[in-house]
Length: 404
Image (cartoon, rainbow, N blue to C red):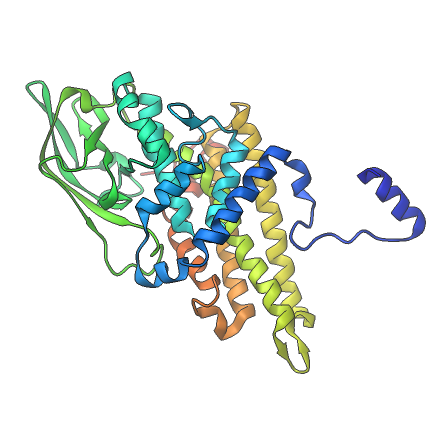
């Protein structure tokens, strides 16, 4: 009996269909069998290889990056939205679902995938020379080589065009000087995509690890995104050959297009973090007894659970709609900003509400909620802060720029 017939039968018999608390709107019905299989594969990987260890990684402030790279490469997730060079040429929906399931485990794991595929591989794929693509992309798709994206600087975050890192010509070579900060994968990367001011405008350069004058050091004492490698990069008279520059782009269009790719994945990933927080709170509320019964029977607890569920379902519908626009080639950077802004905001609200359902237990690493909450404080800041995306949307509405 199909769904329409079931509804008709239920109406005639007076019966009611009971929505699943894990898929209240039946959103899974919008996914193809292939997409559901991919999601199940990534979810199983997270359950078997990430969740048993991630609390310890978070507490220790570490991530087995090489192992994660190999795993994600074997699953075909690195650069999966790209074509050729061993990349899967997946749909935007498939890519988004992979981001969602990885971030349901931890934002640091999804960040690794995003940086590798959207921020390091994408500019090489989109703007690199044939030689650069052949040199790096296949190795990066398997996880044999790790990349990082070096744009942010100590004094240049939301205003990347004000970067101080420079690239000047010296004969046929380039000399790079500057400092980059908050660089995911920086100290474990085999190649850094470094953006610098040149006489031709902002240019991207491929800097292999071990190049004289190039150094990376990890940023200590983080309280968020701890299961992730975050680094400071130093470039002192780094000499590169002429063919180290990405030939296909000049100006801020290059790095900003990479950020748009990554922000799309965040719109999905944030839903994964929110889902984990909601489902943890739902299960806990049914098991925690106070005043003679489970706290799930209390009105205020139910209100929190309902708001979390609505947020997760709404965020999923938004992400899937953006994926359809992306696959159709009709998505704009402002629409990606919409998804990043609203879904990360929703996820952070869900994490805070879920933590309150768990009470004191919510602050321990025995449960994933505080870890996700702290991570989302970074996610709401990086790759465009909440405020910056608000102004992007404001400019789209009014055609007036509020920047500067």
